[in-house]
Image (cartoon, rainbow, N blue to C red):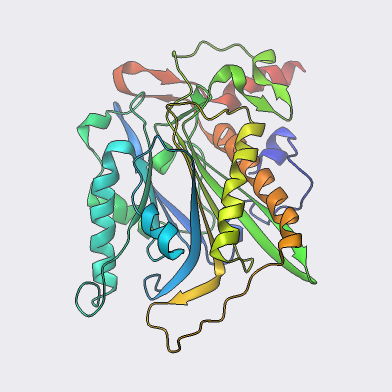
Length: 347
């Protein structure tokens, strides 16, 4: 259920998609594999840009690094070629290598031509550091967990302390996976822009909801924390944007992050990936010139607004969907939703 229905929190002016998730973009699905066993509080989240053959029918894409304290894989080729050719994986920092290997094996099974009659494949994997709650040094993520997340991909996916978000902390509270979407009308047609975030960043004192500092409402006892740990933002749309325009909307994600109180600290990796399902790039083109559509630049303001609103709401959704989690060394990180309920009942 959305945060508007549960908490009467209304972010922005634009209409939302029916699920208010990134999966409102047709064809986009998300899946999780969650590990929640004592000190092991981690997982994998997978995102499929479309249900078909991604290697042979790539989606146009761009990335943007707000603050580069991160260990992601695949961004160099995304920036060079402007496309994504694999599912997108999210996991913890020390499991990027395992996730990448698992994704490569998955793609080799799907595409027998890779490194035989054509070139190699560019796996895309993002991470945040969940070591506060998770035994990250145990390297618990395996190939089976990646495959389970990929097999779980669906439109109606869970948010909160699930998948890669299981061990994450956001603004000192329980963070994780959050998502939201916005609809825009152009030339008489309706398009969708969706966001998905993996939140593990910022401090409690800076958390703001609809302009109100949350510290004015509650004063929980929290583990010591700094503004570090990272936030990954994925933007998806069915708007016909080229890779340069996708880079422009990726750079606007910081507006939504800032509205919730983040200032992108030194030790926090803020990385954004944006893609469109409208412009497909064939791996084996039949002609030298490809037809690619793009939006008129003077219509981009509406898309920028959609990004800001969707990212802001996604961060809050990750907080309000996450439950309290106890992990490594008995550390407990509380849920914002559980902390706000007494304050809400007293209001």
